[in-house]
Length: 285
Ligand SMILES: Nc1ncnc2c1ncn2[C@@H]1O[C@H](COP(=O)(O)OP(=O)(O)OP(=O)(O)O)[C@@H](O)[C@H]1O
Ligand SMILES: [Mg+2]
Image 1 (cartoon, rainbow, N blue to C red):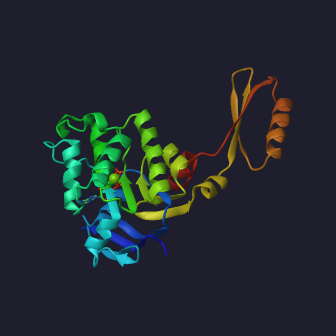
Image 2 (image 1 turned 180 degrees about the vertical axis):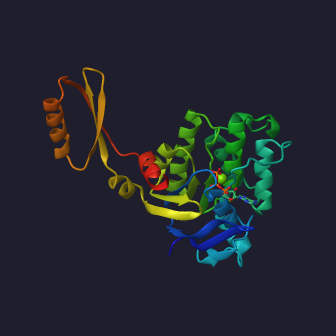
Image 3 (image 1 turned 120 degrees about the vertical axis):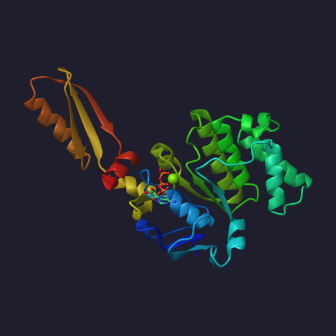
């Protein structure tokens, strides 16, 4: 049984249909990236899952339970990191996390306190744990949002553009931490991001949302396999020509044909592997 299913979700804002029949499922422990241009409907879908919005039609099932009729049970299973940063600016990260534990009825035992410190450590906030949250930088605030979402050890972590405004090193640390969460707790992760390289590296599956519809939902490797490699030949004149490669024999064929045709010799040969970015453009152009 999938841990999370979106079943024919439609969402309208007045006359405008932001989501049209979104239907896909995620298995336990999977890492799925939901990609889409600005305005594609990603946040709308996540807000329906979080219960911030109610879908116009369809249902969302978390561990066999529908989110509308079983809202408090399904919320225990979900940790949602919103796209917008929001928390009380006058509490420190430590106080914020202790308070969140209280909201979830988690007692302040030694083990639970250690978990808070582990989160602060893993999200590179340990040295800022006693600073007022309004004095944190943008990237630090985002990381505090992630710690907050993880306070009750949710089975499903949903991240809506968690790395926007986070520097390269901390982004890398965040992905290492996500892998650790998957290993330690078998956490299922649903991510939205505009950094396609990160999505390609991290995800088991990719969903592409386009104008409110899921136009692709596939395993990452499967998706990349269908795209062709590109051969670049640079001539001594400085000119570069580009060829799509269907199979390996095309490489030599193109090189020989071009050597014969051109009065200049080839001085550089490059083969570019298909990238998620190419696939994304292909589907959404
Ligand atoms: N409260 C609202 N009222 C009316 N239209 C809305 C509302 N919220 C979102 N929309 C519209 O719904 C569409 C989807 O918006 P959404 O925020 O879900 O996109 P997104 O994929 O998250 O985009 P981004 O990558 O910019 O975060 C957009 O056209 C947006 O203008
Ligand atoms: Mg969004």
